[in-house]
Length: 139
View (cartoon, rainbow, N blue to C red):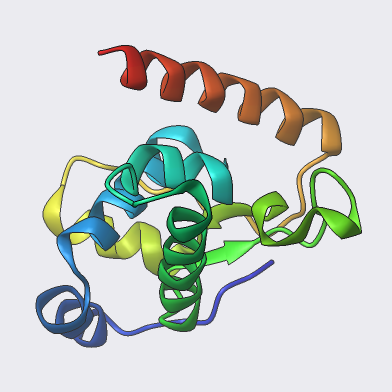
């Protein structure tokens, strides 16, 4: 689950040139929630899609892009089993993603995790994230 190291200069380049506002918003949501399912990211950031399938496709592309830049990583274990598809990926920030957010918020103290969390912890955190998303949708 460990992400690769990215130098501060490279993080600044990514932040200035490559990452869109939506990408930064996704990273901030992961900062707030710790773990998010692909479907939860869609509900938070891809509400303008024509239909849910198009939104899920756009979400998967955005998450793959962030994963390629080394900002996020999916947990090895999927929620919902192997046949749940990309909708079941559980995403979290890498150390590089935390450091990128640190560029804009000097008060934020990143957390470093080099372990795979227990299934119960992930389920609990995802339920808390779901509550956050439902409150966001209501507001």
